[in-house]
Image (cartoon, rainbow, N blue to C red):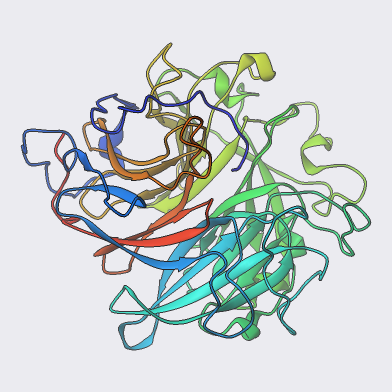
Length: 459
């Protein structure tokens, strides 16, 4: 997620974004109300924040929930840096458990504190912290949820109210000072972290994990692999031996399989939205632990396997799983070029469909491209965290496919002459849909944003 990969945005881009995504957006948002005509796209222009933190449209307001370097309320140390993927899980008595990743490498400035019983590898600086909120915005506790993991990028929530945090690395013990192998998924219970501990879910594979989504009917877990150099990553499913068994069920093992789309070795070659492919096959991964060879380099038989550059966001919606290819560049070795795709896989029909293509053709320096974390919005449409240089935004996408700016990071970590802004990450909504939570990666800041979410954005 932290890889630099986009031209700087225009400084004025936040106020006049009207770039269309192409694709069958309506299938994502069936059942939501039609957008009202408000005389503008989205919720209106961004209003400069006098505090210099976060620009939002009129009618929206934010609260800073947590900032890196501040003391954790638990007394375990300081809030770590590099806030990344995140989810909001309902708790008892109306509370919300907000669990967030810290994508820390060995060089990161502020590690996740080592806590007994919650630490996998003391030499690793990544992990998760968890906040417990009352009324959606009042922090009542903040503590370490798992520590000693590496490069915790994204993940996903489970139907049994836990978080699966993903390591985006394949580093082994002895590399960069690590004492254990990395590249795993860890389960985190934000309400009681010691219940899940720091146990790698080894059967789910060891590779550069990005995100996951769980089919709430079957318990199948879908996983993306973020590989930005050839050979590119794969899209996986994990068939747990004990599906939907609550915390601990994934430790019982299962089968890891990779997706094969007949006749499509590289998803970037598909350019037309609505293109659909039936007969999707799933092939067992020969060695999920990658003991000698990375999973994407293993032998998948004479038919090969389907790959894609920069597979990132992943989420479940309706009866399908959606996943994001952030970008593809033929100069990097991809079969085609695009500025972001959203794919939909329907397990019942074994069919894969290209739903959205991001960004305008031939204008790679404009906003509305290279998506990363992504989620559904309660008023209809999508919320998208871009990943790149220049001005950093959370963008919304209306049901009609128009892009609008919802938030802009104003925290300049560079200089007035050469400004630098951290990306947004971990966009998610409270269980009641009344609050949007999002992280600023650098400086690590977690925001709660309230406003007229149930009013559909115009567009």
